[in-house]
Structure formats: structure tokens, C-alpha cells
Image 1 (cartoon, rainbow, N blue to C red):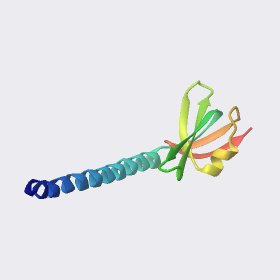
Image 2 (cartoon, rainbow, N blue to C red):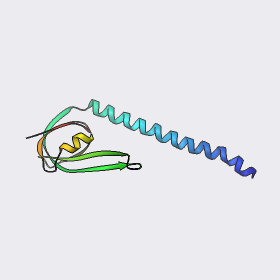
Image 3 (cartoon, rainbow, N blue to C red):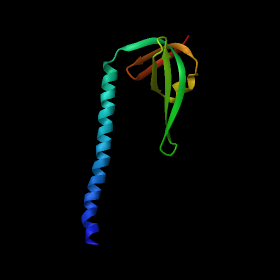
Image 4 (cartoon, rainbow, N blue to C red):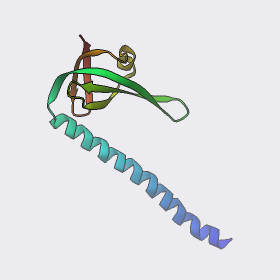
Length: 110
């Protein structure tokens, strides 16, 4: 019985440290990505919407939206979008994609 009370504080600290470490790591990663995007040039290029996908988080309470664009060179880029922007895109749409690093800024059909 004493062994359980001796081990519990150690397990609690390890669990807390793991959770705290994950949160800090995610914040650092997101901050780095935002800094890289802010330092990237804003580009506008002719592109085609190749595909769209969603990723559902948790108990179906949060959805992240993505679209893949293909440039005239054949290169592809997947960008995260807001839900209302995602709904306006149709696979096969052609137009001018504006982006900054991995940040979607807009798509204008032509």
C-alpha cells in the first residue's frame, strides 16, 4: 500500500510534465511556422484546385479544412483553409491562388 503512495507523486509529475511539454512544443512549432510565413513573400500564381479534404478532431466537434492546388509547373501545394473558403472551392476550379508560405490568402476563379 505504501508503494502506491510513493509512486503516485512521481507518476503525477511525469504525466503533468508530458502534457506541459506537449503544449509548449506545439506553441513553439506554431510560432516558428507563423514567423516563416510572415518572412515569406506573398505570391499569386495560376493554379487548379486538385482535391479537398477535412480532418475531424475530438468528438466530431472541430474540423480542419484543406485544399490541394496544382500549379502550371505540375508542383502541388496543400493549404489549410477556413470552412467558408473551403465551401467556395470546387475540385477542378482554375484561377489565381494567393498564398504566403503555407498560409492561404485567397483564390480568384478565372
